[in-house]
Length: 126
Figure 1 (cartoon, rainbow, N blue to C red):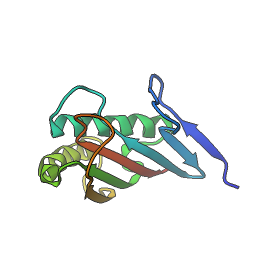
Figure 2 (cartoon, helix red, strand yellow):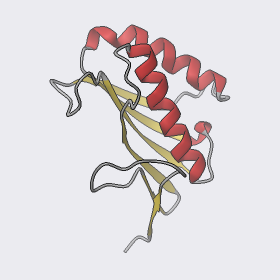
Figure 3 (tube, rainbow, N blue to C red):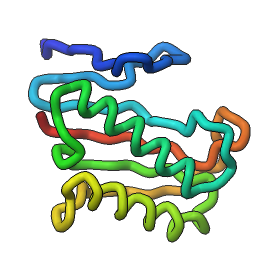
Figure 4 (cartoon, helix red, strand yellow):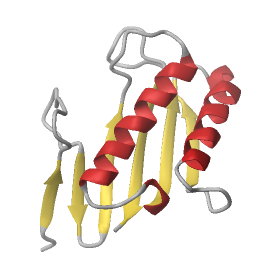
């Protein structure tokens, strides 16, 4: 059996039966992160979600550059271009300029929280 370790950054709020991050061997699995601020703008929601992921990755002792896989869930695929601009800038500002993580982006029909436009999960190598 793999030894699992819960990763939860200081001050993080968990609103359900899940861990923000789970360390399994040399891998970190980051649960889907959602925007917590009251904004309805895809750019701001994307930035918030990516910052949440960064906090979890850093709490596990890694950096954004350790992220190898991202899954982006969009309520409206027409938000892709705006999300992608923020996404690219975020990774570049965190030292990733060529070897971006692999990524899947899909449109979903609905989210559990009103006004939610995006959710992102990640996998990092530690």
